[in-house]
Length: 277
Ligand code: SAM
Image 1 (cartoon, rainbow, N blue to C red):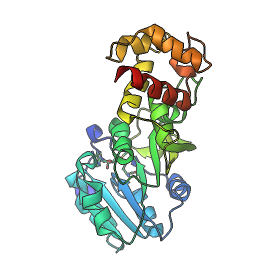
Image 2 (cartoon, protein in one colour):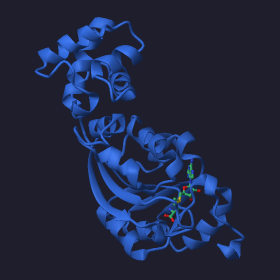
Image 3 (tube, rainbow, N blue to C red):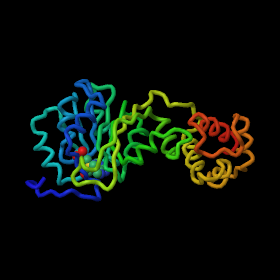
Image 4 (cartoon, rainbow, N blue to C red):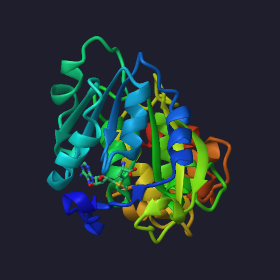
């Protein structure tokens, strides 16, 4: 990086992975073979990128920082299965820019050491896409990973857990110490493998309403879920109506959001939607 006059840009979440052992474990956890099209978000200085290209059929990396493009092109010059796209991943049309060019593949995998400041928007961009990946093996801040993989009853369980569980089967691969990066981040990291479900975990009549309801249920997480929803959903829905539905579902009327499984949220959403929408 010195040779290119490049310094890590903190505002772009640039913490570069130095540890080859970790890099190999990420690629192995993602089960990359030469039958795979892989998309990497933020190749940075290319340490993970090189290892991915060694295993993948094709690798497309999307990098926002134009100063890194000449460096990454040099680092990857020996690979003819690699393409770099200089773009913001949050503004990149995945189908148009990538999938339509690699039509020999019927699916793709995402692998990334994510820029932590936009972890959730990046994951949601892939999941809400009409063409979602088959899996995402991604490094993120440890606390965010704990929320993504938490189940009902855990203190980390919240709307992010419900949304990621709705779309994916989530498996923790490993924790990674700040010492494995340059510069050292202020936080610890975790690698998750998120296998995207062919069909969502539960049947939901109205996805937008379901997501709104989940968010509102956790908006006042210390209160009863009936109160939190009644106060924050934005529809005129009495808390007693919610309590009657909960009891009918076999749950106490004073249940808190952290006790509701994805299935319970789905049922509550389907029933409430019929009343309020
Ligand atoms: N993959 C490299 C590694 O593991 O060493 C770098 C990872 S670093 C944590 C995050 C990378 O994402 C940086 O290269 C940064 O420039 C890039 N990045 C940040 N925001 C981005 C965005 N919106 N779109 C694409 N890349 C982005």
